[in-house]
Length: 293
Image (cartoon, rainbow, N blue to C red; front, side, top):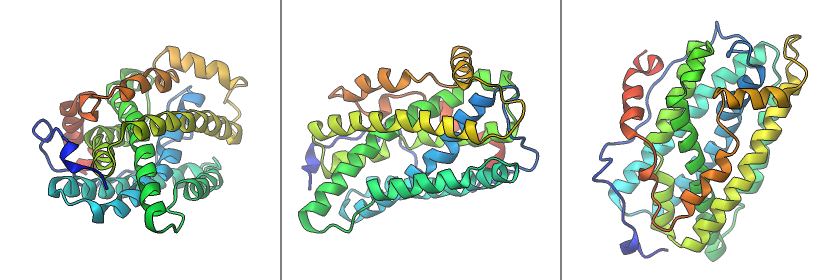
């Protein structure tokens, strides 16, 4: 594995334990379009909290596979907490998915297809020996690149005042902000695990660029699918125009994030602790209605 002496982590700056929180969300009063009058923005948000968690399941499985090779006790603690948080994300979003399905939005079939694809592309493939070790490092590199974007989006969700101004249903607002806050909280874990087991810049850069190439089409295709499956009479005709309008008004993150963020990730000196405010994330997690419930 990697030369661990070359791996420096910023524990002194973010010295708190990562752990899964027991949360409860009541979706019974959530409407199909939980951002009023914002059909496309609602479905973009659906992609963030219904589709992306399938990748998070694969990420947690990859880290569980890496855990026996990690001897650094602090990093082991972080990885274990990360796996617990991702499991809680999956179960919480599953409740939202079932509720939207009951309202007539065919989410399950698409999510099942995404889960199948993620497993085929990012699963362990039953390899052995050196091939297994290299594929583990490759997946960690890919997931580290993806986690960069989820941390950036998580930070956006915490700060997006436009969501409240648009009247987003409080349960769904809490769901996405709780998830976003935990993405910010554990933003360094996959990156540190990659650096511990490999640490090579060439692989980090290549897999980071590949993560961008994979995530952007997933967002566009998933949003288009959910919009098409939305049987509501009032959803509007042109989803592209709604997408641009919601972006300009700050109701959804800009798709240009996928291009503007990668140069920062590609800096040789980059570390995820340089992103956003950990204080904001922890402050929200301390006051989240679902976490307090």
